[in-house]
Amino acid sequence: MTVATFLSRRERFALVASTNDIAREWLASDVPEVCLAVADEQSAGRGREGRAWLAPRGVGLLLSLGFRPAWLPPTQAWQLAAVTSLAMAEAGEEVAGLRPGAVRLKWPNDLYAESGSNVAKLGGVLGETDGLGTDDPRAIVGLGVNVDWRAADFPADLAGQMTSLREAGGDHPIDRAALLESFVERLEASVVALRAGRFDAPEWVARQLTTGRLCWLELPDGTVETVRAVGVDTDSGALLVEDPATGNGQQKVHSGEIRHVRLSEPRVAATSGKAAARGGV
Ligand code: BTN
Image (cartoon, rainbow, N blue to C red):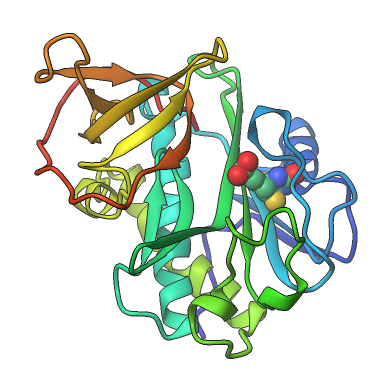
């Protein structure tokens, strides 16, 4: 096992309110980047859009990374969350024995397992930034993954939408420590690359679950639209959707949540795109 040299501080906690809060406190008290807080359990884990993130002790990997991305243009801060998800997708495939590419990303960076006509959430990312564009930029990338959680123990109201690496791999126990080490090793390589101006855009594009599919997109004002996703924009992190007025052309979605992906019909060929918008970190 290689020891990650890019981590300035790494600590594992039995119980915290939220690992994002730990990373934020560290950044506020001058801990250098990249810092990593991991918890066995959270008492107030947060998801996006004010949701809670719940995971019983010991079955999930709950972590937050703290960055000081003065080396990254603020318009590219979304890439911190993207490399985090990509590193976890590859690590998850390795430890669960899944085929490469089996873990998909649902824009912007949530982790999904796709099997046949079924798709279920494996993990989610909560990015929080402060002071981007100033001389003291801070970014926290929180990641929660369902790891060694048995389907029989999933909460009844979520059982149809969620899965775990254990279940995706055929009900084999998953070693959370091995997953963490594999993730850290992969993340180190991609953060080093990102610092040198290299982002693995083809990999981020290839893993997107939504491309070519009809989706229900909830916009920040709460309205829900049915859109066809046609790709993601590798300059800005935006979701690209077919222009509803013309049926062709592309619109960039800067923020929003995909509530549902329709898997029951064939994909429409994807197009590539370059544009300007933020998926958010
Ligand atoms: C989502 O899908 O809504 C995002 C979930 C993010 C959950 C992780 S768990 C570790 C970190 N700490 C938190 O409080 N949230 C993130």
